[in-house]
Image (cartoon, rainbow, N blue to C red; front, side):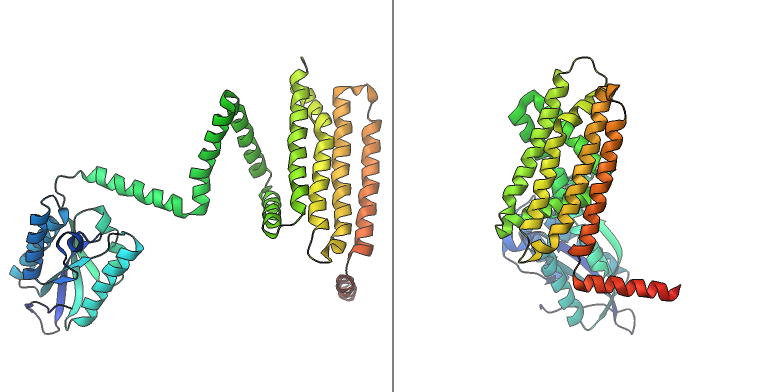
Length: 381
């Protein structure tokens, strides 16, 4: 560290006020080849003069002159003070901030005086981003901004937009929303033209449906399963692709049916859509379940077999009941009997699958644990 300049003391404790100027992007090092920290009035005056000659438009030179002015003011008030200019790195961010703070820490630890307060002179919003980090080390009693031929609102807006842009790029969740979604929408419009508007509306509707009915965990689980299959090169990816394809085919078939239907109301159109696409949706659910059950690690597929049967019976029951309800809404001459029959059959199928899962699908350890729980319940009673 360079030798400290003479400091006027006004007390016996050796307390000192530090006047700071910060060149966060290291224009001083790049343009005149001087390394920080620059300590003392003479050294700072020399640096500011050389920098102003090298680049008359450089705001850091004016910032150092402003710091010298503040230093002289405190000296006239007979305050113990020192002036320092800290330099960073062209790569503004974590790297430059570490360099600046290291220079500050070395000066604070290396001086024989106790630095209790500081005054920061900056040339704009960029340098002032270091204020919280500096305050964690010493108290800042004054902060002045030296602006030369610049617009303060425009500059502040520039750095706000810059910081927001960096946050979006670095944060994965934000980047998906602010970059990924607009990219998908633009691709849809590019590929499908005016029809892309309806596709985008459909996409928004699906997102709202998932959010509205709290289906995020199911969608996330399905997404993770597909990603896992791709990473581990499982054959289940074929079944997942088939499942997604069947959903698209089912939706297209249902849409084609309601498009060709003339006159019926919205309820009937929904019923026509469900009736036309229900089989495809059921097969899609079965393929997705098979992908999870059959291609598990080692012998886990045996453990997953009975839960898969329960899952299949539930899927079948839902589609079966919805199909008959749709048929009734399209033509109510059939009466309620088919719906009641579908409900009865569904209850029997689901009950049988749950019974089989509990009897044959549970491990011995699970059964033992279940029996212990039953014994504890009986003992409490």
